[in-house]
Length: 94
Image 1 (cartoon, one colour):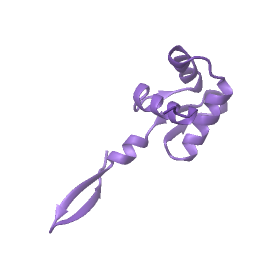
Image 2 (cartoon, rainbow, N blue to C red):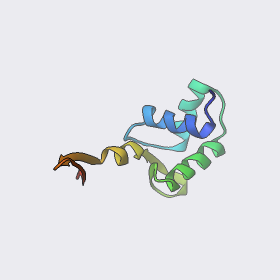
Image 3 (cartoon, rainbow, N blue to C red):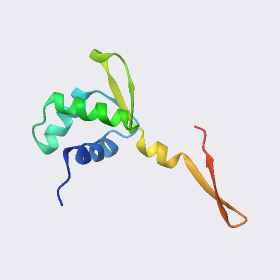
Image 4 (cartoon, one colour):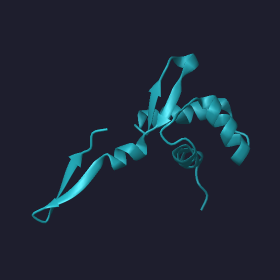
């Protein structure tokens, strides 16, 4: 099964840039060393889409923009406990 660019890029960010800030240029250069050529505009478009889906955090202006992968933080930010046999979810504060 072949991954889409979006799926491959999301997995790439999850494992290559966990919880660190990065630019689209960082991603493009690193991605190209592993998978081959990808346009800067393509990387920027997918990063923007992932930000809108709440997979990434974003800071900085257009020329100095940085992103940080946060999707796994959202998944792990809830802790499940059992009380009286019923699952109870608590938000974990960092």
